[in-house]
Amino acid sequence: MEDASNTYAPGDESPAASGSSYAAPTPAPDPDIGRRAFRQALIDARLLYASAVDGIYGRSGLFESIADGLNAAISKLGADQHAEVMRFPPAMPRRDFEASEYLKSFPQLAGTVHCFCGSDRDHHRLLARLEQGEEWADQQRPTDVVLAPAACYPVYPVVAARGPMSAEGMVVDVLTYCFRHEPSIDPARMQMFRQREYVRLGTAGQIVAFRQVWIERGRQLAGMLELPHEVDLANDPFFGRGGKIVADSQRELKLKFELLVPINDGAPPTACMSFNYHMDHFAHAWPLRTADGEPAHTGCVGFGIERLTLALLRHHGFELAKWPRRVRETLGGL
Image (cartoon, rainbow, N blue to C red; front, side, top):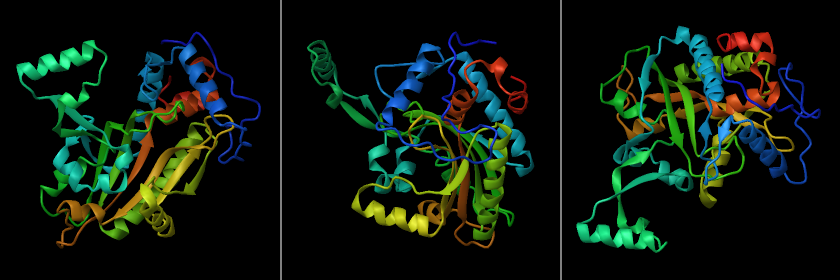
C-alpha cells in the first residue's frame, strides 16, 4: 500500500467527523487561504500532482485506492437497484450534446474537442506560429466530439434508441470522467473529475421515490465514512440573467438537493453528492418513453468521487493506517 510522506491534520476548528451534521465554520476573511493550504498539503504529500493549469491534477496510487474503495462502497449500497451497468469515455457526440440543451444553460462550463484539419501549407503555418510563441489554436476546427459535462448525458440517447421502457422503468449505473471549464485553486473544484451515478428513468412517481431513497442512502454512506455533513436544497449554476430565474424555479420546485461536506477551512461546504429530478426534460431532447408511450421522467443520484476522496483525506488525515476502522471497512478494508 502506497503511503504519503506527509500528513495533514484537520484544524481544531473543524466540526467533529463523528456527527451526522455540522455547524458551518466561520468564514475566513479570504476563503482561498484554506483552499490553497489544503491544495499545497495534498501536493506536498504527493497525493495530487499539480500541472500548469488550475484544476488539472494527476492522482497518486493512494488517492486512487481510496477512490476505488468509494466506488466499491457505492456499488454495495446500490446492489438492490439491479442497475444496468454502462461505462462511457469522457466524450460524447456533439449532436447529442446539442440536443441536451446544455449550451443553453451552462455555456461557461462546456468543453469542445478541436483538431487540425488543414493542408501541408496550413501545418507549416501552425508550426511557425508555435515556434514564434504566437496563438495557433485558430488553426484547428471543431470535431463531432465534445467533453461529457455529466456522467448521465450519454445514457439517454442509448436508452431512447431502444424504444419504450417496461412499466418498471429502469436504473442505469454509470461512471465516467467529466469536464467543466471552471479553473480554480480549490482542489475540490477540478476541471476533470469522476462522477458515479445511478440514473432512474420512468414515471414521475418512480423518480421522486427513487430520489428520496437515495437521499437517505447518501446520508447513510456519509455516516459510515464518518464525514460531517448536511443535505440542503440547491440549484445548478445557470448562466446569465435568465439563469437566475431558472435557478429560482429549480429551487422552488425542489428539483435538486446536495449533500455538503466541509473540506476547506474558512470556506463554504462542498457538494459531494447530488440528488436530482429532471422532470421530462430529457424526453424532449430524445424520445424517452414509458411503457404507455408517455414522455419519461428522469432523475439521478451523483457521487463526486474526487470530492469524497478529498473529504476523507481532509477529515481523517493522510495516513490510512490511522483512519477509523469503520471507515476503512466501508472502503473495502483499506
